[in-house]
Length: 229
Image (cartoon, rainbow, N blue to C red; front, side, top):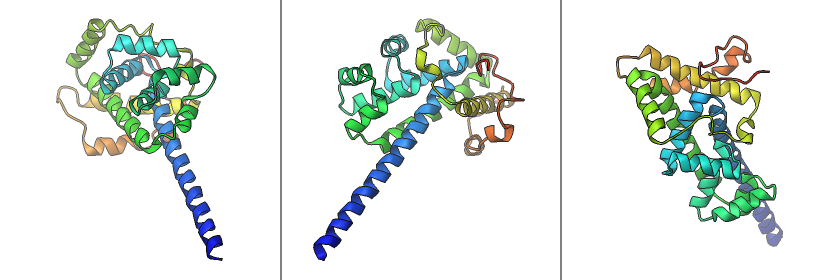
C-alpha cells in the first residue's frame, strides 16, 4: 500500500512539474510575441532593434544580418539568443530550425528554464517601452535616434524577414495601443524631461486595446501601424 502511495505521489509530482513547465513556457512565448508584435510598426521596429542590440550586446548591423540569415522574427530571435546564452550551440539551433522545428520545440528538447527566459523577455519589453517613451519625449531624443541609425548604418527597409507578421490581429492591436499610450504620454510631458513614474507603468499595464473593441477608431502611428485588411 505504501509503495502505491509513493508511486501516486511521484506521478502527482511529475504532473505538477510538467504543468508548471508548460505554464512558464506559455509566459515566455507571450512575452516574446509582444516583442514581435511591437516590431510590426516601423518606428516600433527601430526601438525593438535598439533594445535587443543593447540587451544582447550586439551591433545592430550584425543583428539585422543574423536575423535575415536564420529568418526569425524579433521575439524568436531573442529566445534563440537566450538559448545560446544557456549553452545551446547556435549551430544546433539553426540546424533544428532548418528541419522545421520551432524555437520553442528546440528549447523543450534541452529542457531550458522557461521561467527565467520569460523574465528576461519581460525586461526587454520594458526597455522597448522606455525607448518609445524617450524617443517621443523631445526633439533632441528623436534626432539622437536618427543619428544612431546613421552611425550604425541601420536601414529599416533591410530589417525585415518573412516571419515578422506571425502574430495575431489582437496582438497587433495590443501592441499598437501600447505604442500610442507611450507616444501620447511622452507628448504630454514634452519639454519637462519627465521620466516614467510607477503610475505610468501601472496605467500602461491596463488593457487599453479591449476598450477599443478592435482596430476601428484607433489612429495608426504615423510611422506604420496595422497592415491593410
